[in-house]
Length: 299
Image (cartoon, rainbow, N blue to C red; front, side, top):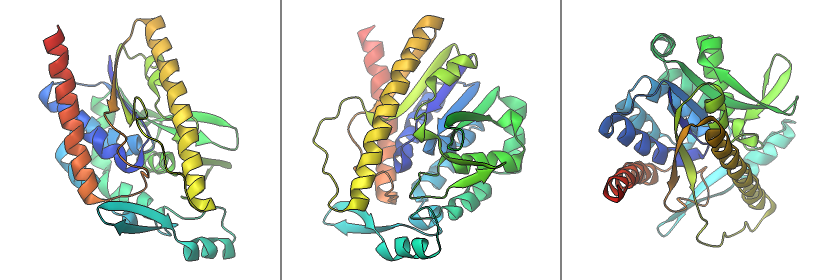
């Protein structure tokens, strides 16, 4: 049983879309199971129904207002460089309203239901082994994996949304008395979970470069420094997930294929720029193509 696993990574998910497009269309890979965390959770349902054209249009056209109902960020441009800084007015407004997060992501919840239809949900349930999204149960201090086979359409859309909620910058969700947030807070790339669910071959897209090739520039105020800190912590979680995934694959005789980004794509994956995401999608496709061509040559 073959599984496709996609890590978290915000707007860098466009790179994973390009890799998946090459594997499915050019290599003819047919996957039985799809697992994702955060942005990976947005990608895997559309990949499971094999509507890559629709996924490309959705992912390369998403903007800040499609994600945030209350955005804690202001997007700015300085020369060729695009970056975000904190929207102090919106953050202050959240404090006045006694909210626990700097922003709200209810726009993303609406966007998910608009783009992932009930018919697509039914098609996946009848044709695929499973589609699984990762969430963090903060109340119980544990990671949970939500299968499309165990959820109604409404519930599954909600879990996809929750998997993407990168707190404290996005919404904190409550389900059955428990509070949930981004799956990446506990598991950035669920390779081990795919193996435990019966995968015999795993293609895993890691939305980070294998080696950090340059020094990171830390934020100049407490908010942007907090973004850097969260990024550092998630990088450590991701490295642990990969080590655990490799061990699980070795112990169970599972073939594991890892696809990293060839370079560090962005300092802040909460920038949603059409220009950048179109570029990253193409880079993902070309990277996967080159990786397979090099493999054939070496053999």
